Amino acid sequence: MTRRGYALALAGALMLGALPACATASPATLCDSQTLAVSGGAYTLQNNEYGSAARQCITTDGSTDFMVATSSIADATRGVPGGYPSLYKGCHWGACTSGSGLPIRVSSIRAGTVTTSWRTSQPRGSNVYNVAYDIWFSKTPTATGQPNGGELMIWLNHSGRVHPAGSLIAGSVSIGGRSYDVWGRVIGGRTISYAMTGAATSVRNLDLQPLVADAVSRGYIRGSWYLIDVEAGFEIWQGGAGLGTRSFSVSVASP
Image (cartoon, rainbow, N blue to C red; front, side, top):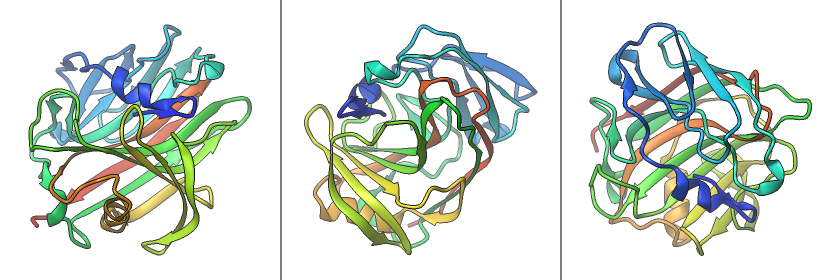
């Protein structure tokens, strides 16, 4: 996942396979790198702390929601986020959700093929974080190991002096009816990021096809690759307690 001019690319590379998911989908607290299958196994919740040894824990009621209950992360100056507490559908480093409809070949993605909705809670103060989708692509439809294709991020918002990986390659671009600043990075991992020019706390029925098509046109993703995973959460550099996902969904239609 992350990377940045501040090394965000390392984030994706350092994100190792998560620990086995907890067996129950009842109210729970997850710390360190613990995961939990939620919504009947259709999604996985992951605390996903990989860039910090400080205490970070999230709570959930077992549905597609969670809150950062505690976070002592204070490593913003190091560049790499301390963690990415998030929900995902698909295959994350070989750990797959059930009945996701993924992987799907990029060239088969049409309007309405993959849509997503997400509602969040975002504290301000001295917290340093982003509110971002992390979407992964592989060159083959494999479900094991780290994705070997590209990474596409969608930033809804951020707090503090952080920005997407690499450099700004296009400003205020209209894609799918929304305005984005487009950032790109190739060295250390191919990543393209779309940062909404207007801060958002939620999106409804966001169609990924226009963004994927734009990434293909810019050479960051190829039509022969496969979309294998859609994640949504918060990359945290400092603090983060109170960040929350109120609801999250991904719909995958047959191509």
